[in-house]
Amino acid sequence: MSSNLIPSDKRWIITAVLLAGLVGGSLLFTSFLRAADDAFFLCSSASAKSRAIAAAADYAATPIQLQAIVHYATSNVVPQQNLAEISISFNVLKELAPANFLVFGLGRDSLMWASLNPRGKTLFLEEDLEWFQKVTKDSPFLRAHHVRYRTQLQQADSLLRSYKSEPSCFPAKAYLRGNERCKLALTGLPDEFYDTEWDLLMLDAPKGYFAEAPGRMAAIFSAAVMARNRKKPGVTHVFLHDVNRRVEKTFAEEFLCRKYRVHAAGRLWHFAIPPVAANASIDGGDYRFC
Image (cartoon, rainbow, N blue to C red; front, side, top):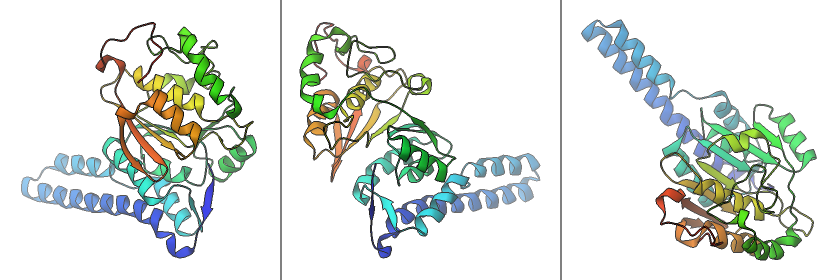
């Protein structure tokens, strides 16, 4: 995940997003305390005040949010995604947080994503070891894993053809952990990746702009499998960046499905994918996801 260097007068974009949440939280915190004082004096109930204070604590800024404000307010480097693209994910996070948020790639926006999911689990996966070490050194509080992928961008077309003849890739049978037969399944990743049911997935990595790069084929396929296998109520939100590129667009339409696309802005597509239980019955011999 790369970043853009922009003039200082544009820095307000990310800072404003973060400050909005914190200012709102501060106002709620104050209102809770005032309500608690009223309850205390009117009802002489110490327990009422303690309950209100405990509730207000849920709106207090977390350390990572404060760190994000300081970072983006004093830096010329901001996330690669523009305000319209970020707002799509931000609006979902406002509704779901605290949530389980999986982000493919570490970058200048990692601190922002983590701070927008306070008290939730935000996990980052990064394939570039040197970049992984740099980012985690600068931000050791981020939850991140260095991972390896078994695909290359130059294999995209052959992978799109071959999965149709491999039953372990078919939607009715697909799984991820240990699925060596399906070349599009993400295998060999940390247990946390498989053991967590993710509410949101941001696909802004791995690299996909030169032949030997891993490409996002497996990430897109695996996001579809995880979404379809969801056990909790509700949909899985998948955000795919760089849809202006052929591979990202083709694999999104093959596995994430145009009918599940709910928003689009710039180079970002947002899909809300229901679990398979919410779909019509599926033919076990059918390779089609959409």
